[in-house]
Image (cartoon, rainbow, N blue to C red; front, side):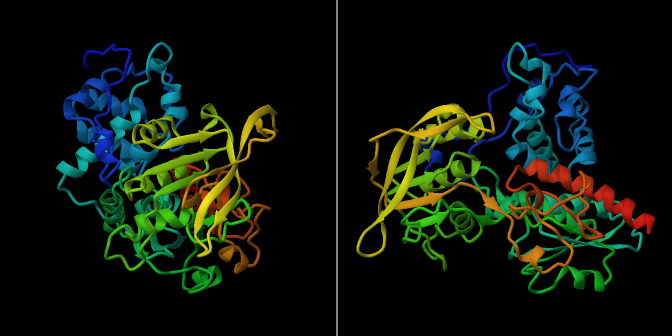
Length: 464
């Protein structure tokens, strides 16, 4: 057994210098070296009760994989990860470990928790760079399942079912598979080559991926059953953007964060030869305080904006974005205008954004969510000098699938209704998970839903 490392603090993550990285789209975090990973792994106490595992949506045996790293058995560590997750290189980069596994780490009581996410990333990257073995094609069981959406939940359910022997076909509306992993999360947080490698691994075990397939238009769920599928999983995400319904939102230079990030990440609109070029604004306001808002703001900075503002109606402590993303944004020069809220977007005679009228806020009594309710300060109205506005206040599921599928019920927010955590919907044989059920949430929660649904689909088909 490796000697324990009792350092109170986790090994720092090497990163690009802030004044360099805010001008490029290369990955910010550079990853642990071999020695850093081994040293950090030896901080794990290998607790017998494994509190970190209970906080992991996909139930990775965290102490076991970390113990392998501590003993320099990197392939053994990868094998343990692979039993629970199909996307370890992704989760290690974008999972909110601080509120999940690391939030329960015993080492975090008197110091910093073990860098579980950083170790997961290291193991996945090490395997990708050093392993030359091809994935083994499982023996087919003769059953077919259709998966709608190639995002985190769809990729997870497809991978788990393929390993059980099912013939799985993923139907993806866009021209590239990956869902939010390719259109939503910027290259500097999640390199697209890593996502593509994970998809290639799924194809190697027999998963078919059909792109440009808008279910509800090209094919309906009824037609998916007619061509031989015994079950259908809906993992179509939540790609319909929300707006504030304030004056000026139809002006040129106003984007939803969804459109802005999709055009940058998927269509490479920042390139000079792009067929779908995007405005290179001078001063940008991003309305919202979540991870998507941070991604949009940091992307706008990389496009050359002189000033980028995060406009959020609550305070810094209430920002829903990950602490690490907020810190990276601050380091890169993003200006936080918290306790502010827009009331109108102003335009010039050409229909372009010329400013944003805002009011200052103060926090009152807690609302039903437990957070203090923001209240407008009297007489605080002012104009923020910007020429572009990006709305990042949430998304909801697109209604196309539910509107073309009889018997598939949704709630008032447009999210599909499931009977339990297994993902069974109100239509027999149709399962759902991820943002299509919960609304916009995290990658790892979508993956957890995919794992649960895969197990339920297997039980359903075997019981027929």
